[in-house]
Image 1 (cartoon, chains in turn cyan, green):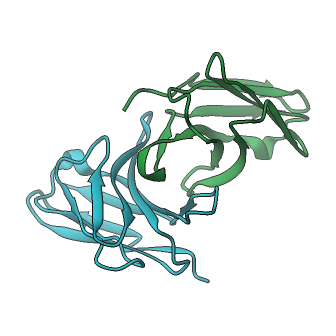
Image 2 (tube, chains in turn cyan, orange; image 1 turned 90 degrees about the vertical axis):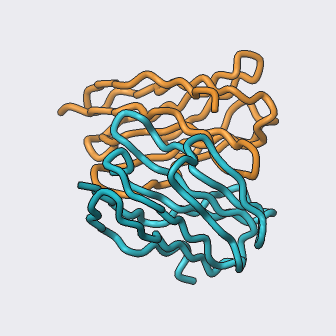
Length: 112
Length: 110
């Protein structure tokens, strides 16, 4: 199993550009989530999904969209990037019968 | 969401014990977690405790849970310089996502 994969590892965007951060898992997990990590702020939940076709907002959803068309994939879209979205983004997944959240390696995004 | 509270910094000498404290928000959380993050790295699950337990020991790590006060602690025995990192406590919230504290930076000095 590859676990949770995220692409790209690094990205630099200009203000106003759009892009999609990719997240995929090969463990057939129902639950997936996106977090952003900023210095001194811990990890904050952006969006989460409890299964294909079902998504919901977390603590800091503004400026981000998600979709879950398959169990495996949970992409995060930045519609119009802003410098405030400069952060490290982590994707995670978890199965129903498991206790552990599996985290991807992260995407470091800089918006200039 | 509501804040999971942790102290921001802790400095200990090598060989001493470290105790990192956390106050969580949701008394119905079934699992509570401790994650470790080294500089520039991702998150590593250190240990977890199920809500019907008061204590869990795993080698040098001891987790204590006080459900009445919603207080969680992580004790690292015989702390080593390799334990220097940021430690996050986290609780399960809706959708099995996690609500994290801001993290405690542990510095271990020789």
